[in-house]
Image 1 (cartoon, rainbow, N blue to C red):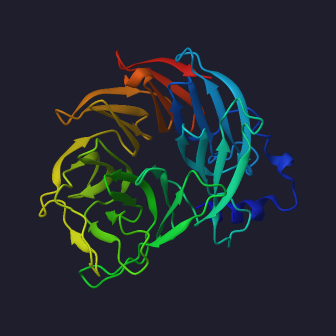
Image 2 (cartoon, rainbow, N blue to C red; image 1 turned 90 degrees about the vertical axis):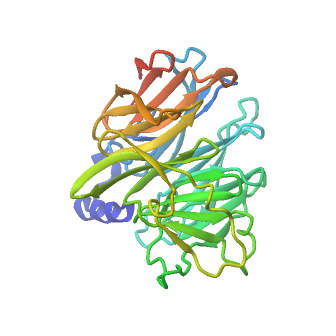
Amino acid sequence: MKKIFFSLFFLFVGCATDADIFNDLGNNIASPTAMAVDSTNRRLYLVNSNNEVLYDWKQGSVHVIDITNPTSPVRLNTLPTKSFSGDISLDLTNRKAFVSNRFSENPHASNDQMLTIDIDESSTNFLSVTETSVALNPFGIACCFPNDRLFIGSSEGVLQFTDRTTSPLTVTSVNLKRTLTTGETFSELKATNIAIINNQAFLSREEGGVVVVNLDEVSDTTVNPVDYFIFDIGSPRGIATDGTRLYVVDESFENSALISRVLVLDVSSLTPVTENTTVAVKDKNTDSLFVTGIDVGRNPQQILIASGKAYVTSSDAKTVSVLDLTLNAVEKTIGVGKKPFSLGLDSPAGVPTTLYVGNLEDNTISIIDIPTLSVVATYP
């Protein structure tokens, strides 16, 4: 999608400069696609992708925000980056942030980048950035199996991984386009989001379905690490786990009706296999994976799980659904800003207290108090 936008952009603007058309991003919020919270050090890291292109289309940023008072955030620093960033993952031990980035001025580019950001505020290298080449259109990031191994999804039919403690990063690609037990091979495989349960990665496939990868085998190029494909999930988006079950945000048609929901899946039967040459195709219903579906607002996007609850953003409904995972039911639906997408949770001493919701169209953050499940502030 970004490549198409770039082509149209140049077609219409001709010889005009960026400054003639859009203002600089500066310290503004612009399409906050991801957030990560360091509760111990009272910091919120906000990724501004500028996907809606309200500012210079080349510009994105990462904000470092003080949440000492969780309902009154204070921006401390702005790190200018390229636009079209995706997810963020923190390494709090080594004080690094990893941000996937999809920016390219070349519509025929064959790779994008991972940004490694120094977040050690005591260091002279604070907010320095190192770029590492990764596959095209990276978005989802997940960590860690084994310890410190970071996984990156992309639109190129590969799952990539790196040891996040090394500098520079060395990225390895795992081919996901394997032959199914039906005899077919994935024609497209855009892995948008990733969840890890023990030694397995579950990848939401933009074209439909969830791909299951044996992480014990990703370093061995002589074997097939892709074990299963749950094919009957129409449009998976965010994906998360409570450590046991898999929760997949989905919006798809059933009996001519568009259904927006979170699928609750028991994946315990999908044990890792070895020496398989094909990918076993699974039906969530007939293979007894489906536990239930929990209805949420229209156009659901991301999901975050903590302490027996799941929080789900629904862009068109302008809501966050709070799910009770013991009852598998909606506990409350909370109205937020326009086009809510990203989520960040503040959990001092391991107790969730504040939820931050990134609104792509408003360019704001809705701040939800967890004990009362109500919006108590909007930032900025």
